[in-house]
Image 1 (cartoon, one colour):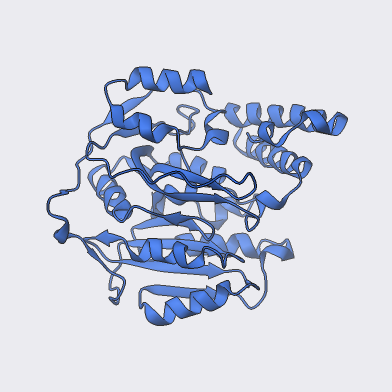
Image 2: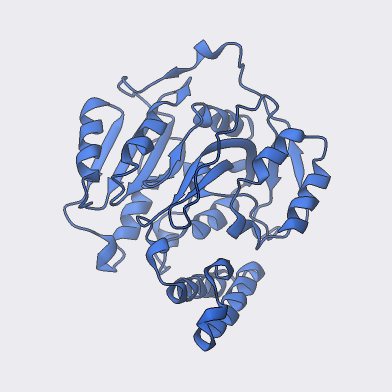
Length: 342
């Protein structure tokens, strides 16, 4: 990891603001990547001296929204208000809608979603009468994909129910970039970690950066790299994301599937700006799995992706998980939680 950070900083040593961001990105995912080519992109900055040109859309009824913010939540009552408030505080010069898919929460999250939907006209509440994920069928996957694809918005922003945004100009920056760069299909950015399991506390929020840098990451399969991606920081072109005709053939519907197929339609850009907070908590489905089950799930996901796509990157990840799974079953004490991710 240290060698990777050193290599990135050597490329961007003149851009001091980048140093502040890289250390907040997803370590578990970055460790599996090879930075073969990094390219800076010219970013048109928001006019920070004229912020009045951007406004909150929270109390307004949305007509012809440009962006759909898709939230999937289940039993996230502790952060449900932060989650929704982080979207409602967004200051943009375009309208957006907020779609909340609540998979039959039992802890009061559904009540908060209803409360906000009644108060704010741009929130669409889709609260399920029964938990679809627990059924183990394709119903949950189909619902998630429909929430991302079946709308008229040009862009879709992804947000999980246990995470939240802290930058009020997140959507404005990302949508402006995608509007100006038609050859890009997605845009991601930096974030902070808050780990409930390790007792890790949220680091101090970074100040807004005036000198924004864009880092281009290559499309797959042209170049087997996915750089600096974290789903709740991303905005995608709706027409570039895969539909159920593609995703329905997979047993799992994970972020890596979305990244892979979206990057087949265009490039990705990582903006060096901290957009939000990723919570590692008991409410996360993956976080509640045992270490062995996590390894087994990743092993199955990458194996399935390789068989379907024949991508060398997935084959390598699959083989790595095979070795880790064998190690864990032979000697669980050596296969720690820190070694099982990607």
